Amino acid sequence: MPGGFAGLLSNIGRAVGGVVGALYQAGRDAINSVIRNILPFMAFISVIIGIINATGLGHVIAVGLTALSGNVLGLVILSIICAIPVLSPILGPGAVIAQIIGTLIGTQIAAGNVRPIMALPALYGIDAQVGCDFIPVGLSLGEAEAETVEIGVPAVLFSRMVTGPTAVVIGWIASAGMFPK
Amino acid sequence: MHALTVAAQWFIGLFIAGSTTFTGLVVGIVPLLIVLLTFFNTVITLVGPEKVERVGVWAARSGLLFYPVRYILLPVVAVLFLTNPMAYTMGRFLPERFKPAFYDAAVSWVHPPLGIFPHVNPGEIFVWAGIANGVQKLGLPLGDLAVRYLLTGLVVIFIRGILTERITAIMWTRRRARVAQEPVA
Image (tube, rainbow over all chains, first blue to last red):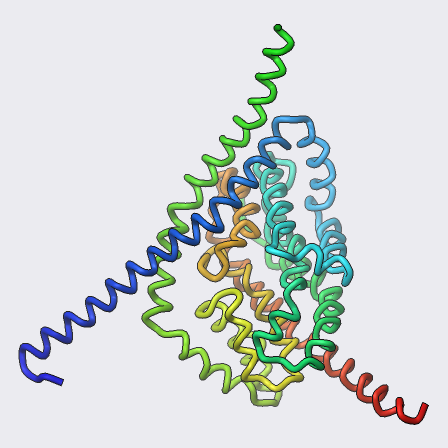
């Protein structure tokens, strides 16, 4: 390593160059992610929400969703449905179902049909199935043996039957005092 | 002719409603998201994901004290630095009997931080943003909700880790018993 002033300058230059390079690459990754994942999903959800809102369908869905997401019991039921071991791997992929139901609940909150205090339990109510489609792959990424995968898949699915509704209740309790008037 | 015009207007109205939604989403979410993603991607590059591996080695120990390390610290650090889905590779440091529980804890943590750390799973941002957007439209602040989602997430993944570990252990014992009986029958 060269010493003295020239060495110092070269070290500073290298450090700054490293940070700037990392920032630039990070920006590129961020834009890529927005274009590849986020904007397409926004387009897709806009078409669905637009059609639902502009046709009368919105009112039908509003009634059903308000009943489910307007109170804790409804959300617990929603989370149990999402966590049924046969359904949860089907509902899981890409979190598409959670994202659509979440957006629909969001529109109901904005419309004043669902109280905003229900937002946190609702976040858990729509998401009891998170990752249930991905268990074998996720375990393989962790270099799990075949026997572990065989046991791990039902273990996680059964566990969700309990922890799905539990999460809703935790979210509901933790909402206390949010959004004071 | 008049009916046709009305029908056409109704038809295009469906998509005008959609375009209003789209504008709202792009303007309301994308700019902040891009800046946050850029920042956190930079931090990850500068810190270096390989540092997370040390936590993985540490979390493999058994004992009551290591439950929070295994099902809170390791999933949190793994997801924040390796993001979805590479976070699950951290399971390789754990003994087989802990792997399903670790996966359950880690995968359950890919949504609760989205309000503050969207880089962990930008492709599934709407699990958070869908509901958050509705709250925002009422003119309410999102910070409180984002922080509470993140903190309750810690509690939830801890419970999931412990319970799934128990269920895995029970199923393993039953399986061993069944395998042991088979030659007799």
